[in-house]
Image 1 (cartoon, rainbow, N blue to C red):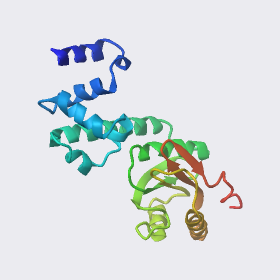
Image 2: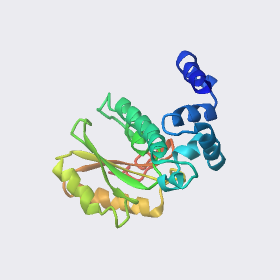
Image 3: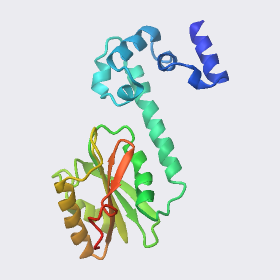
Image 4: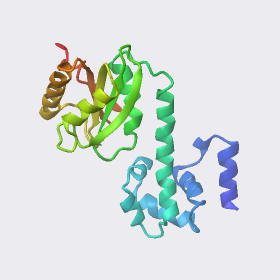
Length: 219
């Protein structure tokens, strides 16, 4: 009876009227035989929705009473949310400045727990050709060789590129290594007549442009 009431309250009223615990219990009712108990156990381990959505899959699996279907549901929710924001950002695919680049790239990092590098490939008028993840780690990491970034740009016949990476659980400020890698990539692409338009560093919902910060001003 309680679950039916939660369903009606969610569908017929403003969802804001439900607590986090009630929303979670409603979601888990589709995968758990005892969603109320499971919800209580989850919220003890992860008191906020943000902590829960950012929890590692192996940590969720280790919770008592947590079955595979429940883990799957909890992983599907943020991924659908990420795809929703991606589809909205792609409505206008001609990008003009660092503000556009940052907001276009933000959804790619929604819920990211690891450091990732994306390469935004642009044609001569700023229209997006493609956006590809080129590896895990920072731009200067051995896991993301500059050679691959350059090859992706050549393969796409891009006139310009925007490179982006994130600082999980950090702040959107460039390190010395970020700056030196940016300068090296700029010079490498310059020799191939490809413009490094910007380097965007993302942390949570914030981002910083290395071009606007002055590191690409002379290019």
